[in-house]
Image (cartoon, rainbow, N blue to C red; front, top):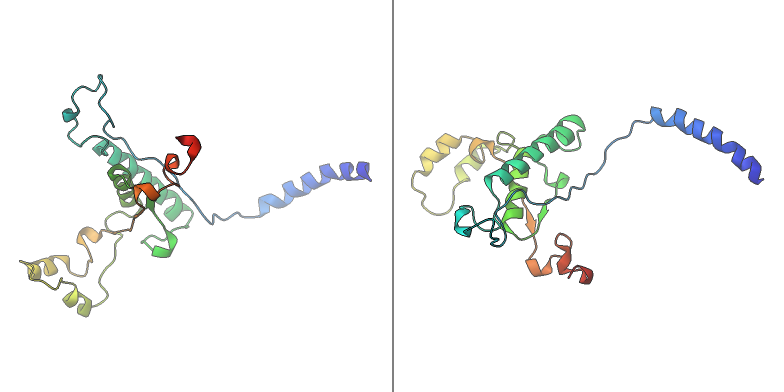
Length: 186
């Protein structure tokens, strides 16, 4: 019995080789985990010199880091919106969940990446003239009528798409900052 099973193995492999290419795989889910982009140094080291030379702040995301994540977002749009059709061309809340650790550099990295994934021009419009008339805060805003005219039906300037970034307090975070929840990382 054992030798007959072993004799079938070449046929099983051939059968799989014939069947698998005809199956069209479909991407169903993507989970991205990444670090923040380029940032200023966290602490002063003699080779960096005076920390005041970093105009974006100690440990803060630099414009280079913003660009890195913006371009990463553009690539994700090419792959998962344009090529795979996994995400819609306009933001749909049930298709995307974004989580960040509670540091300015990580939140800004996520914002920059989302701007590449859903660039200005992909944001929503107000649904009706009723919505346009009521899309003002309940306080006096100087120049509100001119702003309403400039915006037209755009919810935000340039059809910008605002996307929520979920953040937990630093002490509660363990999934994105392992040393807080893992005794071996201390």
